[in-house]
Length: 366
Picture 1 (cartoon, rainbow, N blue to C red):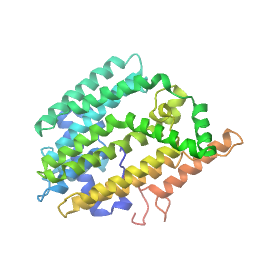
Picture 2: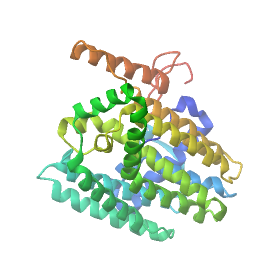
Picture 3: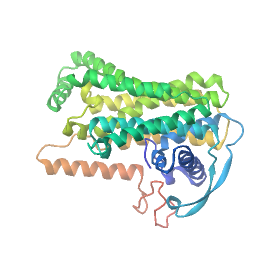
Picture 4: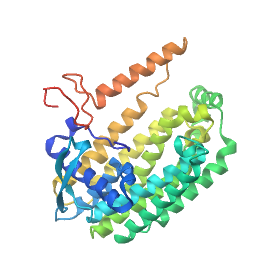
């Protein structure tokens, strides 16, 4: 499962996990019906949030149907949200648009299969087909994907404009040292770098805000539109920042553009921005007018608890390692990953994985 939100079955509980699976499988099948079997690769936990946002604001529960056996469910049937549900349709449209943007990004940076010379033209055609499918799905629920497409173009323009001002890895380390040595002067410089970083994440924030705001229109809850737009903006910021932190080391090795490196932002400063965004998102969720239901309860868990776990998981491996050679740095990274696994997705009683993948073979009930 891909995306920022990857809840663990042990943390959710049986009822919440069943509801989560109903929306997740419903999104997967809606993507298949909208753009064919390959589109199911665009299924993410982040898209489920849009479906839950619509369901949590409506008094009537989302319609369900029985889906056939699936290898990812160990060939079992399941009750899933129907593809005709407005929330699922909106989630499918946003997921396809996000997938198209990621393919364009990989093709431009030369990453993965989409970035190879042989497959670049085919990747561009696949991204165009995903954009058109996203537009078709969006029109069915009155969602204009133009803002999502324009955000991709604005992001590319920002990357192009700041590509020539990317500090080197050594310069970024010197910035961190300067901040700790001269706290007074560094405060203003750090604020300036944070402002530049937020300007670089603004297109992603705007796209997420548009998708979140449309959830209020689908649920006929206009009083939630402004709050949802703010929640979407913060969610988009978290998505962009955590993705940048995860890719930073690989981008520096390959010489690719990264918003943290382009703005000279340290991992500690990025973590502070993520924690601020988490606080704002928690306050926004508290202000929403939701119908008391299992959908609303699961939504709060995903947007508050699970996003907190995502931030912890992402920054667990970014702590500076002690000097003394590559083997110590490697050992420190391994220890950080083990700590993150124990905190996030490993059963404390038996040590087996319980990251919502239904392959845990222990008998402890996790």
